[in-house]
Length: 121
Image 1 (cartoon, rainbow, N blue to C red):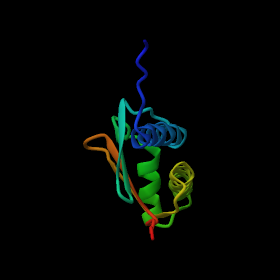
Image 2: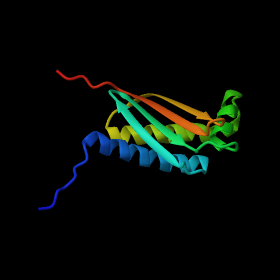
Image 3: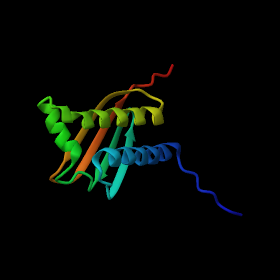
């Protein structure tokens, strides 16, 4: 008899979100993280990308330009839009807020999504 291992639905969703956000990150930042993980707590999703930022991170530079309303902020805006759309598609819930924090000192990106709450009767 063969034992089959079944992954809990939340764990499978965490893996899907991690893989999808890493793919989006690589497209925009040009650097593949050495590690990544996603946690889901109620309507909050947090994805941590380790060794992803670096000194020459295009998204960090783009965010700095965003603060000055520069045209190069487009990459950051496009990244945020695609990342939020990816999470919404995978969860089936609207993303109501997205905070993207990139720390060049620790070389870690933390992506925090707040989802629309589900109300059950």
